[in-house]
Image 1 (cartoon, rainbow, N blue to C red):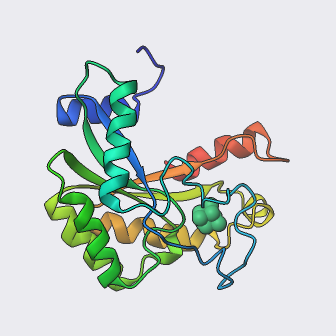
Image 2 (cartoon, rainbow, N blue to C red):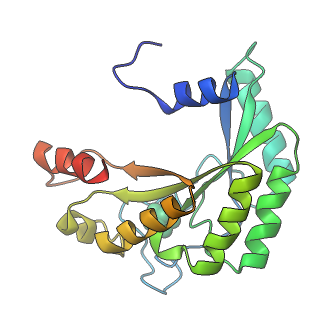
Length: 206
Ligand code: SF4
């Protein structure tokens, strides 16, 4: 498809030589912005399922992968895609390293899974977690997805993001130091944000 930008889909197709589909997973995590550590209300836009509404919460990783494959097979008929296991719901590094390692390795044990995407908060990347991620980065195509949403600190307070930009910057540099691919999520059109605010967020990320 002709797009005015180099899409993630196109980049992955080039890297793996075929269509890559993400299977959304719920590893049974919570989030410091939901469990009372920082807040109980969560980010303003967060859903009951911790922004992981496509994942089949409550099922085993194996069952979720099987279901994800079934759904994508219907969508991508004739493409025989390979898959990225996408730990999407809630904060996917918010548990003891032993638990994280077991879950990530479980997902990677399926031969059709060619990589791992882990959605998390920049304030949940402690030293031991970074070491585990670095280890995984040598074994598979790893990507850490951070939800910045906006670089405007007033908007970040409004959406109850729960950390300031310096925390984000520290996490991005720590991931870069370990050569870990990082994706940043943003929201365009937050209440009270101008076009200039949105462009400033893009400048900040770049
Ligand atoms: S950090 Fe993610 S999981 Fe936590 S409240 Fe915000 S959107 Fe929801």
